Length: 110
Image (cartoon, rainbow, N blue to C red; front, side, top):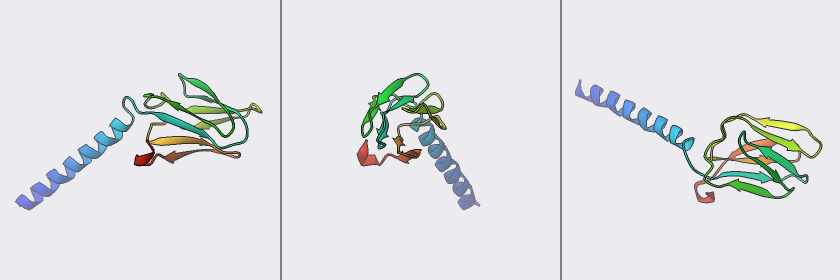
């Protein structure tokens, strides 16, 4: 009986820690990175910030934390692509010639 009680307590503790880790990833600081691997210039709108990013370049929003919502990437042609948000510092926004994707940031990349 005691083994079962400790097993349940352990499961709850792991769940609480896991939820806390997810919430802390989107809480407060952390640098938000955008890499423009395409050949064209783009404008990146995070909801409360906007930055022009040259083709082949990038931008880092220092100590930005998570976006307040979706991220809009506007190409030189005027075409807009929406990245579902919020986007947090554990992911990097990567603009490619044919798509915009989110990729995980490796622990040693930050």
